[in-house]
Length: 510
Image (tube, rainbow, N blue to C red; front, side, top):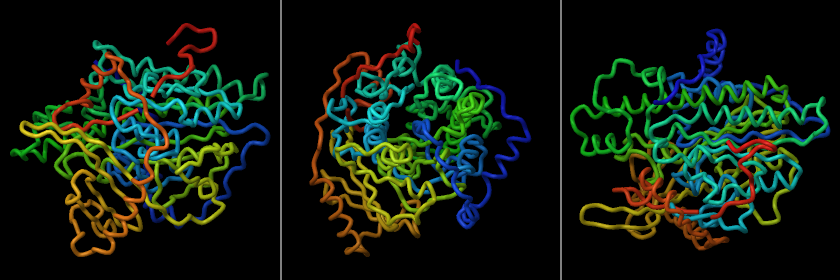
């Protein structure tokens, strides 16, 4: 059974956050932003990077959702910079997180299949912070984030104990945010205080947290399971495969069932937000909130049958690619909303520049938005935002493998199947943000220009070569989650583990 989170914040605090969150975005954009707080003199700022698995931007209150799903995330947005349109480069966990931590596209880092592992030569964000004198920590909870894939490299401490849950403690059955927050607070108590003036050690910290609970199955613990749809009495229970099959073919009552699944998803978001709030409260209690850059994002979203699918990984529509990106802390000018479309490969160079760390010698594909975050310059011109997924589709009489790719620029988006050139869809996002009307036939020149961008991007080829993961326990767990050869579920990729310990100095393992 999942365990409930801590008590809901005091009413006054919740009301204040709600009022901030529902302020019209246009109003936020028009308001005069105060000067950004200066970077701390001397030591570099701490950095807390938080990735929430499967979190759609549009299910957060600060991104326009009607439900109060995210009071703590909303409070971050109200005090910092919120990127209105951030596009993930892949619609599933492994390649998207590799891109987040490398500033490279999946085409470049070559991590595109469920059994791939990171190339040992691939430069990672924690390595850059470690080389700059930071103490680095990572605490993760999803199976694709385990050290077996290579994510531990560059971390002094990498805790993937939750990500390695055995068969009796499935990720699909148990909530993990409370345990992860407990681990994060323990790590911060040990190392965040080391950067305070009353301690002898002055190293700043870089901490990466990966929260899993928003990912299906949607089974939030009480009271979050009934928080947004208390009167439902139907058959949808948020278990992924059953509700996927229930809605295929649009049986009677499906709309009401889908709405309940959305409510369960929103309950997972609220539950995760509560425990994220505990971590943020700990920063305040330890006296390091003002010297810590907090960055919240996600690897991808989830579909709720906007285009006939549930879950993620199989399409490249907004519901799986548009993710939040919120940043608050020293040197960040806000509150402000940045409206230029950006990619999640831009997060690595932005955090490095904000921390005063030179970019790696290897050229990144991501662009730093640090000047925009600091409020120093107007927003830069948009660049193409690329997306891709490798899929493995097994149906009763067919077997298909291939690559689905997309590019978005200037309010237009093209989606293509590289293995089937006749499959091509063009959407005018300015008038059709839900991507429901293919307008390729009436816009040949626009489709051709975007097709050229995709061809040029694809022609670059891999800059690194992914390895292959053969650990039988991990493969079994990925199969359980539906990522290897489940019906209608595509395959995906990534490399090996690093020297990071899963023990805090002098402590037994977690």
